[in-house]
Length: 311
Image (cartoon, rainbow, N blue to C red; front, top):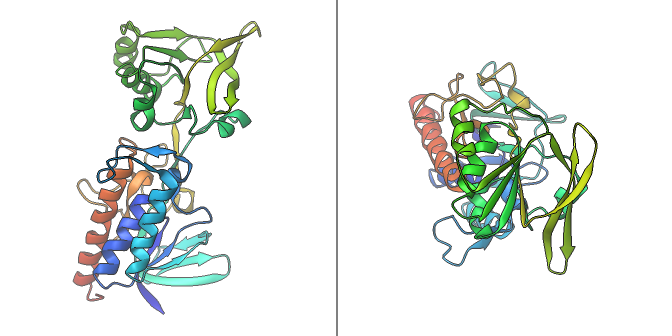
């Protein structure tokens, strides 16, 4: 059987693409991955998605998304795609030895924040540890936080957090930053930011009842000296990795691995293959923008199939 649309990935982009293609009667099937729902599954309070005046827990929100698409008959497989062949139509999608074919594909595999690799990051994830200032900065009003990183992302996060926080410490393991000069100048001129170079977080400290971050243990990367520092929140800003390995050498990408799309569309360099959400977005990485591009991908796919005589 050749499907009209296969959606690879879930999250706000994947579920929105599924919703729109299902309502267009394209009978999409979705491979949601082994951990469906994307980054929102590890997000506690979501207060910046329209329509939820009291906020909502990330996993609960993704459950609502899923239930909505299931109402329209979307076939969801909680499986991980292991290989694709986009060299000709119908496109081939493999889940180990299982083969699925489709006339169009929508990629919504997302991106993953890079972490320090500490067990305490996992323990306090969503309870004071975050990788998104625009998502979670609001929860740290008048509190003191740390931003870890030395690139433009770290500078942007630090600058943004000064709108909410009383103090922002920027921690970098080296003495010089990789960030562009304009971003460095902006942060260094901000009186709410204090820079701590040649330092790394060895451990995130916290309480368990209620669960929250209370401090960090820093290690001097030059002398090896250690010290503890009280803090209310830790923002990891060492970059994101788009989940695009499956498409390397096949789809056009930037130097980091974000899938490139035709401006104003979700079209990739292969006609009939579309990319939406964080896997194609290095700028915004928000649930609402991912959902928006998921809608765009569905409409792009519908128009493509109609033009090709498949819908």
